[in-house]
Length: 497
Ligand code: 3HC
Image (cartoon, rainbow, N blue to C red; front, side):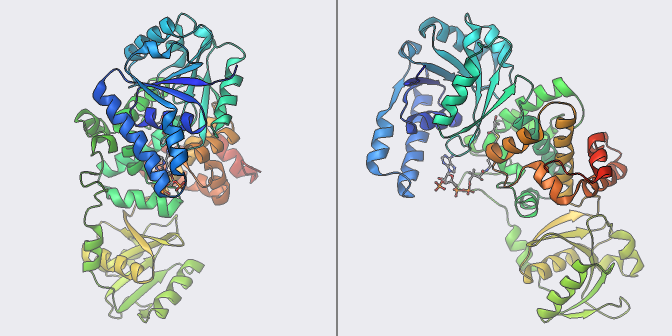
């Protein structure tokens, strides 16, 4: 069946993005919003996105007009009478979805495909409410829909046998990569993404690190396109909360228990970018990043540094960078200096080395988490001005910095290793294959490398050690390494090879 015209029901951020994707692929779109103000707002999102593409030279004026001409705004379901596919993109409430599928059943031709973009509800339960459950399918896009290449095609036990293939073909025609997934909580990408995002909010709420540092750790330490807190604001805190609740009901356990801060912000209507504020403020049009830059600039780089380390290559490299910047280096803590820097490895703790210097209040750890990112590690004895001086030193050497307490994994590891553990657990429990997980996260969430590629790069044995360290340090079962990881570590065989 050729898809010539579709209906998109609900023109919020995702609905407008999905409508744009169809129209750009040459498919006519009936854009249905029963509320006039919401329709106007959604069309405004679409118009803005097309105008931006023109201003960036990605579309000509003529192409923009052609795409815009394919979109037919509508305030009533009866306009969907002749469409070949209708997709609902409305808030995640089952009663609203059921009502919409009732309307679509009534007006659409019996051959039309009925799709849901739900990210958290059971597609089977939505299908069961339709008069023709065989034609109901999940077609799950990722935000921003015009950019992210993944579409999860969610079939149910009720789906007609040809339907998943038809929808996968359609996704390819839209320039997307379809991945067939079964109707399980979170499908593949959200089941892995959401516990990681939730953990980031818990770190923020516990005062482990600042909002900006948590996001910088993910972008500059792991290489992800966005930090978890900025991503939560993009997804919507209300949507994230719904997905976590479904995951928690299905799997249980602390990784899925929504962070109280996430719940409170969602309840307060601070749902992210769409509301103008969430974990960050967007009132001025741009993101408010606090006054981090100003704080760091206030502290000047030291002129004499005592360097302590365990003789590894990172330490020698750091020592030569410090010397090359014209800063005096001493190795003896008994000699006077402005600051003691303990060059820490990823598994080391800083406190005992700091105490051994006899000047623990002046001692700060530096862990080179990535070539351009230094983690500034404060023990509970570090005086804050010394941490600021260590950050100023690292910045003088051209590195970005994030502040972290002296806890297992520091900040980058605290975000990354449990996420990799979750990925292994999904494969171990038969939830998804290694390839599906890596495809979902690279194409759905813009990861430059999938979690298993990242894991193999670090080495299964190293990831196992870090998780064991975190589990022992926190006593939290959420960090327990999955047995499959231990097996790969024992054999030395990677996951992707
Ligand atoms: N609409 C349309 N196009 C957009 C866009 C939007 N909202 N935002 C960005 N773009 C386009 C830009 O126009 C630009 O296009 P061009 O390369 O053709 O000029 C391109 O995307 C890159 O944009 P920018 O240069 O402005 O910004 P970045 O390079 O920082 O990329 C990003 C922005 C694509 C959002 C990137 O940060 C990213 O991939 N982030 C991860 C997003 C993610 O994880 N999404 C999935 C969330 S989970 C989900 O949606 C599932 C749901 O169920 C919860």
